[in-house]
Image: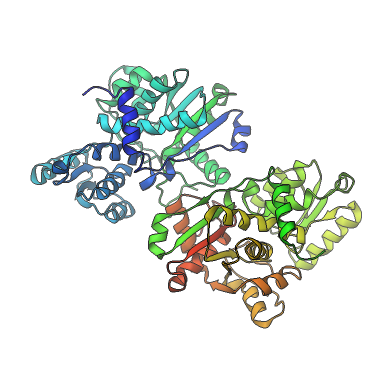
Length: 314
Length: 314
């Protein structure tokens, strides 16, 4: 299978339409005045399971035949993909096996269990996660749905940008956060096919800047000990997401955690909506580079709203 | 002038329509399943200046002639009415004098100043607030706009319930929080004129239960040392709001602060929106009285979203 083309994205959009929320695109006059630009926020914090991840998970699971689903699906994730896959599988009455590191917050484990999935704990290393997932796949014959390195996932995530383009009109710029690159690669493809005049930027925490370094080097540079409050953006680019980003993303902007927290607070205060730190990274990029974005029409994907209210950074 | 009639509310609605946000009515499947009922939330946390108060303030200020506005408007308030009046006056290029107690949070004073109003500080007693306001009115000839004991305010606040009735369809119950009673009295009139089958309840913190006690006694019982996290509901009913509430509100439910915090947290977590404690009181009433509201269609006015993010109760 090749990188998603125009039809793959349109088919993903119609395949998942009745299962997802068409989330609103909202604006804030006070934020626009403060930053001297026009920002259109695509509110994936209101998506089912609380993040855009439900789009990709649904697009993958809807393509499985009944006989494949009998054995269930599996992944390793401590974040939003875990909840998304658990819910998407549950909707099809399929079993989901989610490998989670033993140090994942209890609140996340409970959310996954609440969606009806089975959580398998492992040591908190990437190696242990992959080994444990392999065991599950062999033992249960479950179908693996990777969080981002999967063209079905990329095509599903692309639908958020597609809707944003449809609702916001002509954008000069679209900015998406980048962790493993599923959302950013999908968004860049949506722009390529449906909004040719728009430039795509990635937004990344300084403490987890593997995407910026990978683009500079022209090859995947893995994250080593990433440290950032944006806990959804710790992962490194994948072999399927990197080539798309390399080709279609103009630049990766990085921002310090302090700017991410300031952007998150601004969104909560002015827009009265709950977003997680990772979702605030694109606005932090605009706040830290006002001259660059002056008088531009900017689309921003607010990626998710799953935040632990008992551990807020302000 | 008499208590607002049907035409007063319809005229208020058309008078303010182009100046306010028509806020969305949203639902949450998980909250409905948890509570076994259907709740329609009217999101006044998304209203301009962050609360329903902007409706009443705008309805009052839009009725003033240019020559009245020359001298400006004035009120005493440490809360959402202060911001609402400041903004509504600013939109008409009129001066607003806001008397605030010296112990009001700096964040609230700054918000009022940010809307272009002049803050006059006084001692933190009701007597000092009223005396200081009297001085302003005499000295500046400013026009007083009371936070709730004013039929223009009541008619303005009624428009939130009117829109909720239009958007949600047939409601068995409508619940609004009650402090001074502007929102609750207005809501009860909107239901009387536009949704005759609906029963109206007030929602009040146990620690500021003057409305419940006033209805029981049949006369206004002032709040004495009210203590609650719902800082928008500390005031007592007024001579104009009480008779309307007495006639048209079925009952006042009271809830402890613990239930208010739990309801607020549930709204933030499940609906991903920011509401202030006062706005969560009606949902707390449903959570504490599940059997009473079983299988009902319930309209709830989420009154506002102005909360100090650095002092959250969780």
